[in-house]
Amino acid sequence: MYGFEFNCPECKNKIVTYDNTKHIGDTTKCNSCSKLVKIPKNVKRIKGEPEIEITYLRKYPALKIISDVLNVIYGILITLGCVGFLYGLILTAEKYPDIPPIVIIPLSVGIILIGIVFKAFSELVILFVNIANDVEEQKEKFKKINKNV
Image (cartoon, rainbow, N blue to C red; front, side, top):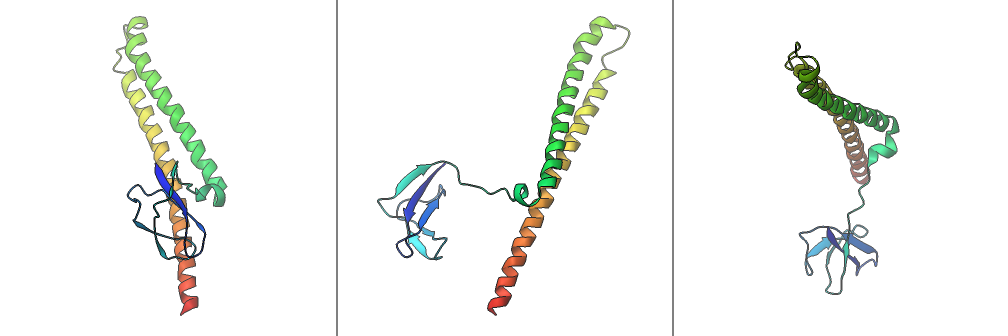
């Protein structure tokens, strides 16, 4: 991803934008003085990713650990399900011809589905943390608005 880096002509603070839709001559908003600023011709083009703050790492470390544990369980169960599926198809037919592979396949599919449920719970934890952060941010904005009235 490409972006621009330049100084605001009003407040002289550095502006960094990673918006791919912006071009030289377009306007962008300065974060410091909140004024619309044209992207100058002598702008420095930069390559990289914007710094995204992951708030659940900082505010809710226990939930991050729970999410990581659920992700590890997900990985283990998916691996076990795939290995069991392959074992059921290939090795069972050779070693145990009396047991049809159709018996092993539902077990493997069930393990994979349980793994997907663990992944869903992991993502649900992250979703609730993000909702809590958004509510807190809106609460702070509401407090600022009420102070100004």
